Image (cartoon, rainbow, N blue to C red; front, side, top):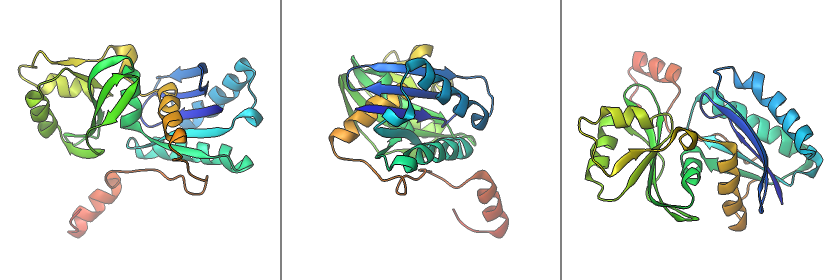
Length: 235
């Protein structure tokens, strides 16, 4: 099976073509440019250079959130557009979970962290043992202080990934020896890791129709939160 995987959930963007046997090709950019500007050209060039037309893609996977509200919407909309044309199965991957697949081959707890602003992070924990990824908690939006306190208490090797990893690490006055930052080349979410996570979902029969594929948000957009605050609405 050939999968097209997409990620636009944060500042970086990437697209990947993969089969069960290998990563066929991947484009990754982290330039701060708008994803609506970069995604389509990357996809076009990837298919051209890999000599894999979209007509040969058999499933579409995307980081469906959490992450940037606009970024997540762009990625999900692109995945739906590709899938709708041929009624392809879709896989919604947690952005946090996909980053745990960056550490395949390790033996550690992966703490995925995305900067959610306002001293909060999107966070989840995963145990990676060889080629197996086990979720330890649900995706959540929590305070930076809560996460760093939990990291201090964990008694196993913990590797921090995501654009909130360095923020969390630097917020600890005395980072414990068992908590380390992932190398920079393994810290960001990537479409190739989306593909690896998606194959596991497909094997488990966890696919969606294009119509069922939706963004996953852990909190309201900033504009809605500010409006609710003015209106005195609890969120």
